[in-house]
Amino acid sequence: SQQGEEDPQALSIQEGENATMNCSYKTSINNLQWYRQNSGRGLVHLILIRSNEREKHSGRLRVTLDTSKKSSSLLITASRAADTASYFCATYSGGGADGLTFGKGTHLIIQP
Amino acid sequence: DGGITQSPKYLFRKEGQNVTLSCEQNLNHDAMYWYRQDPGQGLRLIYYSQIVNDFQKGDIAEGYSVSREKKESFPLTVTSAQKNPTAFYLCASSIFGTGSFQPQHFGDGTRLSIL
Image (cartoon, rainbow over all chains, first blue to last red; front, side):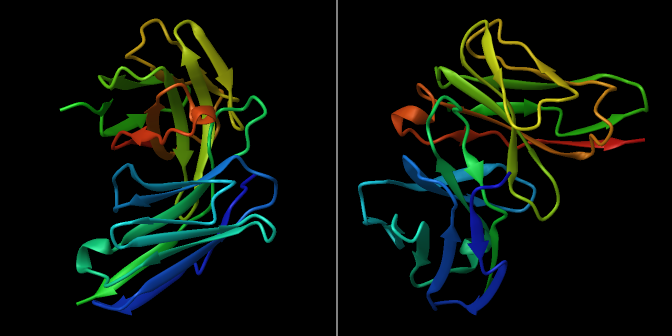
């Protein structure tokens, strides 16, 4: 079963605007990761946030984590055409299973 | 440059045929993973391996098999028992597995279709 659910499923904004996407999950986690996937390509790791962290920044990316609400958000500031991609959240719950559990993703389109 | 190489990029399978997807990494990572991605869906874990000669089933292992004879190689065989194999297959690797909070590095995938 899939752990994370991204919202919205699709998002279209103008270049230069900020993009926010959300992820909700069901069970407790050790860490949550965000990945980007360009069409027909593999996933690229963007940022990892541990369960004891609340916010993390990396360049134009800002990730928040609220473990009480079992949710995370990814903010991309000053969007560029090259940011057009699908974005996935992935959770690691530990307990022996060592793979990540992915959501269905948010497809982001940046209009020039 | 270090990375993960998946081959072939496109693969076609006839009914009743087994096919093997290749995954090679030169990142010296211990853990390797196979995921399946269907259109509009997230990734689902097929198999993973934390060390050579050891591997574990993921969420959707039925109809698939793997081997881990070398640290850098983790081939996936899609057997004839997999009734709906058409999908995009992604291989990934990481240091010591996700339990050590390390990100996964992905190859560019193999798209498998049924003739």
